[in-house]
Amino acid sequence: MHLLIAFILTLSLVSSSNQFSNLKTSVGQICPSTGYISIIDFDVSPWPPAPGTSSFITTTAQFNNTNSGVGPITYSTQLNDGSWTQEIQEINGMFSQYSIQKFIYIMEWPLEVGYYVTMVKLFGINIPSSTDACWTFPYSINQ
Ligand SMILES: *[C@@H]1O[C@H](CO)[C@@H](O)[C@H](O)[C@H]1NC(C)=O
Image (tube, protein in one colour):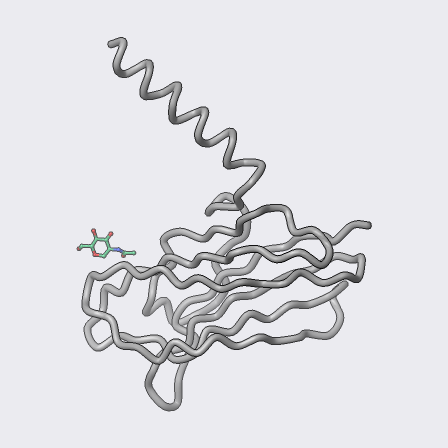
């Protein structure tokens, strides 16, 4: 019983500290894809984005299908519902069935104040490639 309470206390401490430094899966959401690859965790650290700084974006994905791979991962960012800019991370790897992979990217946050949405897309390795997983999250850059 004491062990269980200690465990629960630890869990709540961990989640309350993460709330301020990390995004985890609690912010952002899945966006349309084939669903061939499953995003099982998504983390941005440090969080929230501050102008001109950078964060690690960690996408954890599970490959439950056979012959599954990732070509590029794109990081597309939209400012104030306007134009999009895109960054590309080349992966070009095959991953074994049921494996879990983490993809880490260092993202530099813009200087311009505004409301942003970043969309992360994992493309398959086949040609023509499809969007096999997608995650999107909003944030604002303040002065
Ligand atoms: C992938 O397969 C494993 C083993 O069958 C299962 O436990 C897991 O929930 C599946 N993951 C997803 C994201 O569907």
